[in-house]
Length: 165
Image (cartoon, rainbow, N blue to C red; front, side, top):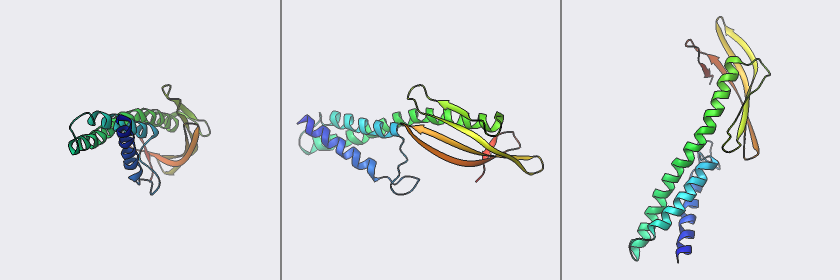
């Protein structure tokens, strides 16, 4: 009986995770891999814990509440881990824009999960006097799959680099 409830909780969590379209459009998710695993594991454990309370419909309600609460907690744990990757990537991006010559990559690697990447400035130019911009390429490798993006950043009066939209 407990296995059936665990499967039900996991199924509900998978259904909830599949519902989101995400910021990148249909078929993509805002969840990173750690968020997804955290959400699913938290939902399954929460559903199992919730199933230990009540009888009949009360037990079903407690299981559902456990799935939702467990999923939320698990998601937050997974999200904080994905933020570490993002911090590494942003630091490498800022280092590349600030200090690296065109064509030289600034790389990063998260020692906790092996995710890695690099940012390479590709062109530096001055669109108007005393305003400097840099085009760059960023590649991130998560789970062995590389994704590459391109951007332009311009130096702000305070010395920071801002992505040009």
